[in-house]
Image (cartoon, rainbow, N blue to C red; front, side):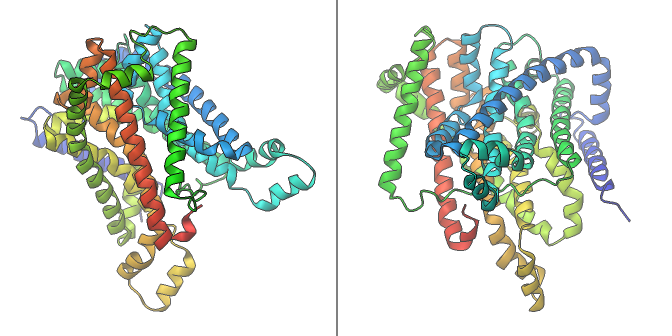
Length: 512
């Protein structure tokens, strides 16, 4: 009988065997290097890879640290001062939606040489998931505990320090576990923007020289360190004797009773404050207006019909490829999770491997998928779908498992089969996890498609940002950054609104 511990090992062995088989079957296509070739290349270049990996991990570590410190501060702020939550959460979302591939060149100009852009992008990539998890954890406290502190005349700060901070540790670790691979991703994107060493630099060199084995070798190392970071933080949680918490980030309902006009007015007000902060920050640091554009510069530039048409054309090309990939990734992930629920033995074999693959950074796999699938629309759409597939699949499997035992017992008592249980009970229980994954997939989809455009396709806003960065057209670069961030934020909010509507009808108890 196969033990539970042996399942991940079998999964990894099966993956390596499949990888080797595909490389042999596609030996003439020069797009897949087998594990044996990759291992040989890594041994021959062990010193180079060791230095590059250490450089990337150093930047990822400092970005991970700073990003999570900011996340802890923001989460504590919204708990102590609840009225700040809408502004803080919206600001955090907008900043998280900034396209990394365009933010990197701007940071390179601001920082100059050095690891500043890598660390900043690692922090930007890591902080949001920790913030969301921490807010959920800080609230996951029995009201009796907080009432007791209040009876002793203590305020929110004491409650935060004595009660909430201790109770939220499992949620914090769950957030850190997701944030660790994201920090590696951010550091590698930062290295794309002109760094001298690191895994990102090696990835670019391998792609430009069409060195397939080197591309697969760098991707394998980056994926391995990301998976180890993910598993390492997960091991910390297990050392505490706790399993991972049920971290389903349902849409809040705190403003569900407010009118649409009020919510729109609130969003406009928050946006105005963010623009004001942008302007004041640039002026306070005395940054040159040549490259550090202000909101007024972007608005003035987009008043030019030619510039506006160029940006809109690029955005339409990007969205044309993003939306089908996004929808396909969500449907495939949720569909496969539902199907595998009918075959419980297969879930135990695939789940550990899927959890590990979820942590592989997009930036490492995009070049490989471009090599394998081509540079056209089919290749780009497939890349977006694949990037979204694994997180959705894992989240939906977790969601399907959350079906209450009493509900299962009722169906069993009526002799209902697995299919009836799946349709009538498990899929409604999965909806919060599906929508949480759909929201987080919005910026991931845009990152995947802009990265692919930047590296390979020569079309879309990703290519436009790469061209404008190389030609110092900072008006267009900043305009593209703002446009992509706005699209991501609006799409995120639309998914959240749809989530509230669906959950209110099918799983109202899941709304927090």
